[in-house]
Picture 1: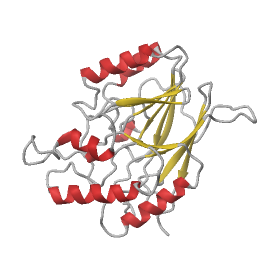
Picture 2: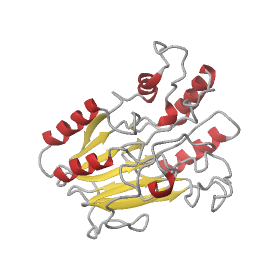
Picture 3: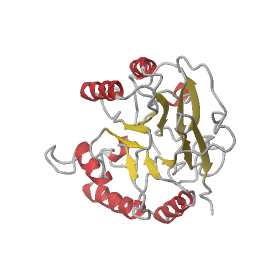
Picture 4: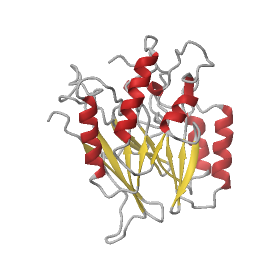
Length: 298
């Protein structure tokens, strides 16, 4: 599948340590997490072939875990962003998504992915044009927002702006959001695009404002614990200034297809298997992120 051209940033800056995927902070034996959550991303669901069946089977695997809620990292539908996508295809994809995500009664907190947005509506006044329609279909309060669970604060960002950056209003909101939190409040941030990632060295797609965000995160280094992303369909983990950055692959792998010459195995995107992550969050801010591959062959 052809990927949109995104701003390609310079090579990965300032990564002081790259840990094995699935590595976790040391947690004392017997300590229990206050939250266990699933992170799914890049589902890219469509009505074609057996994709809905395989997607629902994959969601059942996620739901076998005892989780409190789901974080959905965007690109929920196959694609609405290309120039030749008609209204009927956008409507069809969202209908399949509704059926898919309706298989769980758990709360689902989503962010907007670049392929979720129908920019080619006949008119900007069309109700299906742009981000407001995606906000409506994902049943989220705004294109960026926050919420609290236990003592953890969750911030959902929208990087679908020029240069893959937060727009000025959103950046001002984020600065105030962090400033208003009590010291040592643990924070999880989710964006569709990686803020810091190993894979940007060859794949592109990283936040264009990663330097500004790095500076802001350092100011609030007592709070920011982990940043989650998707978009790359690639699996990596980086740590900088005590913040863990997890790009948690994709549920769809090679867009539910068998792959290409770069796929290490069928359904892989390059060397990354399709899958999802289970995160355990602890009261003192420790986190564990485990990526669990999916078998799309059976």
